[in-house]
Length: 428
Image (tube, rainbow, N blue to C red; front, side, top):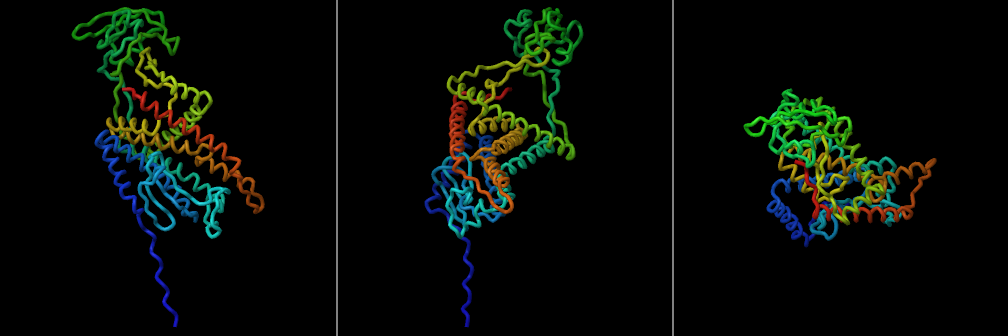
């Protein structure tokens, strides 16, 4: 008489015994963020945590679908705060909130793996499976960006700037024609050479070339004044005249409803623009001149307020960090919170931009980034002929990987320092 077979083992599901205090600490830190910085900052923090989690979930799902063994799935780095094992995988939180990771066995030829698990390693899988895992994280970011942009357009509509009829001078550039003619902040220009103007755009369109004399009708309080001045050369276009005034109220924003089909087309257009700008921005920053400029800025911390010329010789305030500047995760959180305070639509666009940037950044073809694994897998595929599998020697790439890590560490430290001592200030 055969003995009954034992019941199948239950999934191994248990929490790290000493980790519940760490989990409580993490929840307490979120509560502290709410108490100190308010709800907008907490929303942005949770959104970024969710974004990082989904990135690693992309790698995790792709690896599991390929039959790979995933032994760890952690948010954060450093000391373990809390963990839970389920099956082959330990899930948990770590103390340094600077990212997340999943650990897949056999990612390269250096890692020793038990023979019984070799068939579940990353290196043992076919090219398309390894590629699917390597690009999964960035794919998630790109999909999130598309959803965020589409949601913003459908729910909030398209925001466009229109000339405001209710505007006034807010800045007069020292030594400019406007300054010499006695214009003051609060003045409103209502005519150019006796031609009425409804807004600043109309005024700029009526200005003659440099050297010409114009007569401006100026409304100051309840009085109407006439001021004559000789235009200077526009700093951005030598063929145009320049007054030397600025206005923060010259333009206003209005929302325009966007249909689903139109939103789909605009989403793809905006996504392509963000990808292009992210690629160019990363290339500029990590060029020799970009890195030297960044570290020089960290060393001397000179970033004076700048003024950027706009159409019609009208200067507008620009952020203090007009040059290419990378922000740390702390700076990004602060910017996101500031944008969220002025509307959740701004949060959607901020997160879309952040997702595109991180997705592109992860595809840089260098280890330890995802793009480095894409390059290795492709190189191995090209070197494999007639069923003979070629495996790249990762030892030759270790020095490059360490150099990349070292540069990223210095950039991270420098960006944190700048965000603390000279934070990015958004233009009003």
